Length: 379
Image (cartoon, rainbow, N blue to C red):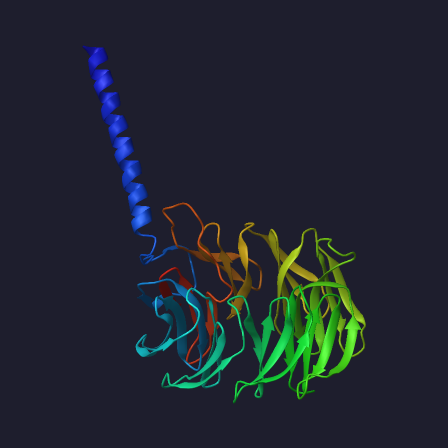
């Protein structure tokens, strides 16, 4: 009798386990395109949710400027670009763009214009009204992106090709600098009317007016870079294909090495402020004094920290794709303040694009982020 009862209980337990596993699997599959919901606030995250929006398809791009947040999605008809008023969360306009189906989107806001890369074109849209201003076919792809801008030009990096300067008013190509494969960074210098292009082992200064080369300096095997007050801060390696674990500061005026610091692992990205250089490596975030290169503190992180980082109100915000968290760290001492945990029942990390975490100071300080079908604004 006891054996029969035990056998029956085992069968019931097995059936329940199978039902739970099947249900969880069905929920994960059925919810793959569903909104994420409210994240868990762990610790003392310094900002509170101000508003959020859920969509019926995944967000692929985001930009903010002049108190407006612009999102980009795709559906069977093309790209859907939608603008929201940051103070109220109200939808301002929605624009549908035609292009290659399933192509990625890149969005940049410059003053009162929204520029959208949606293959094979660059679109210019009025930020206030959503009216299409211009469309120029430039044979762009989903992996190309607008990296910088001035009053006259947009600077696009086309993968495996180089830097292309487009007139901001007409959208026409002004000039190009062909480079080839490899990482490319672009930094305009409006005072000298130069554009610094960081590529390979060189910093190339070109004249913004026509793209002609003003000068070119070899400074090493370059990785991530930032330029601040005519000083380039960059990760470097002593030999090609070696981990870029050296952090250096070099004057672009004199070519002098101002300081040099050797880290133990490769540097993923660098962020410069008026006082500090924040470097993110494969397992650490480190603060340096910008002028002296002296290390202030180091904080060990997950291997899944994604770049770029955000610094706002002396707080550093990081993205952890492995644990689906956004982390707030005090810039002064590196202490962890709190985390937003977007729990993922499937156990897999979310995709972490470059533009899914943005900060804005107008009309007040906000942090905007998107994951899957949802966009959140924190204040």
